[in-house]
Image (tube, rainbow, N blue to C red; front, side, top):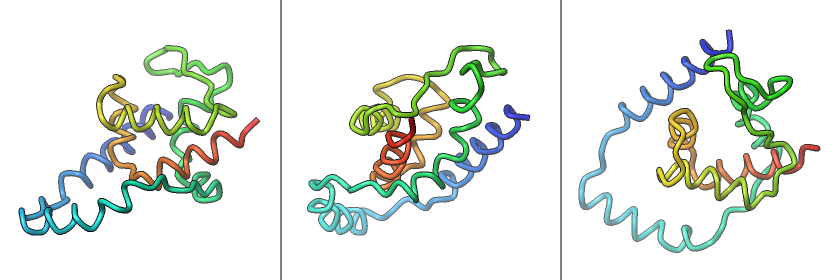
Length: 126
C-alpha cells in the first residue's frame, strides 16, 4: 500500500505543478521585488503545522527498521535530526543539488515556510 500512497502523492504534486500558470514578465518582476526582503529573512518553523505536512514522510521514514518495501533500500532516520540539517537537506533536494528522485519531487512543492515547519517538527522528535 505504501508505494501506492507515495505514487499518488507524487501524481498530485506533479499535477499541481503542471497546472500552475507561468507568471508574465511584469508579474514576475513585481513578485521578485516584493519577495526579495522576505527571502532575506529565514522563516521561523511551526512544529504543529510541520506535523501536518510530514504525513507522507511517514510512508518511508517512519517504517519500522527504516527499510522501504519498494524499492527495498535503507531510508535515513530523520527524527531528532538538527533543524538546520533538515532545512539544508530539503532545500538542496528542492534545488536539485542533492539527488534522489522521490525527495526532489516532494521538496519541489514546498515553500521556504513549509521547509522550516517540517524541520521544526522533525527535529523535535526523539
